Every structure is written in C-alpha cells, then in structure tokens.
Amino acid sequence: MAGYTPSRLAQVSRWIAEKATELGVPVSVDALCHTAVVRLGVSGAVLTLDTSGWPEIRCATDAVGERLVESQVTVGEGPAVDVWRGGGPVLVADLDAPSSQARWPMFAPLAVETGAAALFALPLCVGAIRAGVLSLHRLDVGHLDAATLTDSLAFAELALRLLLDEQAGLDAVGVVEDGLPLHSPHVHQATGMVAAQLGLDMADAFAHLRARAFAEQVPLSGLAADVVGRRRRFDRDGRRP
Image (cartoon, rainbow, N blue to C red; front, side):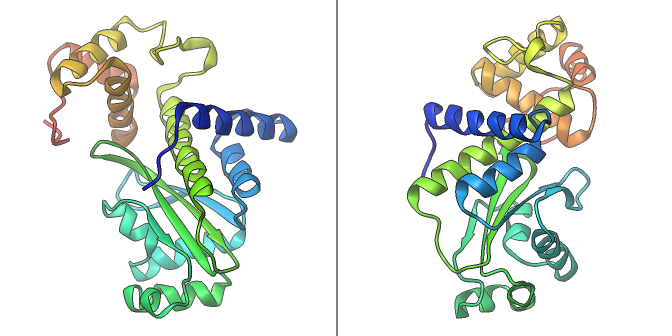
C-alpha cells in the first residue's frame, strides 16, 4: 500500500485551505470532501462517522454517495462495511466485475444500479480506534493510480485530524507545532502518561488521546483529567479499562 510523505500531506492541506477560501467557509471536513473530488478526479466523496456502532454520514458531495452508504447499511455489506468492521482500505475498480458481485452479492448490484462503477473506502483510524471512513466513488470503471492513491490516503489522514481537532475544540490559534494545546496542562501531562503507557512519542500519544475522546464522545480535557488522576489508562491492545 502506498504511503504519503510529510510534504505530500502539506500539499493536500494547502489544497483544502485554498478550496475553503474559494467557498468562503472554514477549513472543515466539508471543504476536504469537495477538494478530494476536484483533486483526485473522482465523482464524489462521502465521510461517515462510526461513533455509536452505526455509520452516520457527516459529509456527502452528491446523492450517489449518499445512496451508496444507505445501501451498504441496509444490506450489511460492501467496501465501507468491510472497513467499518476493522479492515484496511478496500479499493474496488469495477463494482460490476464478477469478483465484486461475488464478494458483495447484495450491495454490488445496487451500487451499479445507482450509477457507481468504482468505490474506494479508506479507514480513518488511530491504532485500534476507528473514527470513520472516507469513501470515494467514480461513475466510470478504473483503478486509482499510485499518485492518486497516495493523495487519497493523505486526504483520509487529514479528515481524521480535522475530526479529532473539532471534537477536542482545537483550532490553529490554540495549537503549537507539536500539536498539543497551549491552554491545558492536564492534556500535556496526560499525553506524557499515554506516551509512556503505549511506548509512543508525544505526537502519536496525543493522537491516541484525541481519538479515544472522539470515539467515546467525551471532552478531551475530561479524559485527560481521568488519565492524570489514574482513573483511566491506555493499553497497547486498545482495550478500554
């Protein structure tokens, strides 16, 4: 699987910022999804959240994408369902191919009937914590080439960061270069403790802390206080204590 570089992540971030300015809106997952359609050459993008065990559409750029999600939830199968259940990226270049029809016998025909020809589902996750799925679809058959796949993974990473920042109440003014909020000593202390518990650096530990707050729909500051107070700890296998 292709991976993105920090410079590529920065470039994709600039694209999203430019699109947000063009639309006259803040940088958000909505701006990200609309940017993905333009920059990745896909027909539509959908961001679904999985915070309660049931996928919820957070952003959809078109009706086809909405129907693809609805169909997968209805029949209980499909590329995004495979990702929701803990899989890695699922890249389907031809939904009408025999292999696709055999793998998803109920969903694939519905997807083709909807007008979709290709579907690429990318997980938004930190360790064992899964926040959602970024799904990209095309009305024409075709693979994502290596460069486009790399950029797609960067879009998924940035979508995750935007969701976690939103949940934590962070913005560009309140964040320093290492990604830790300036105003919360508890968060800094908790991040250090999580880093020690999981054997991670501070940036990755902070990502885990934010992801847990997002998954449990609790304030970041409250979770941090519980970690500092030793009422919560993080285990390597992702289990909730």
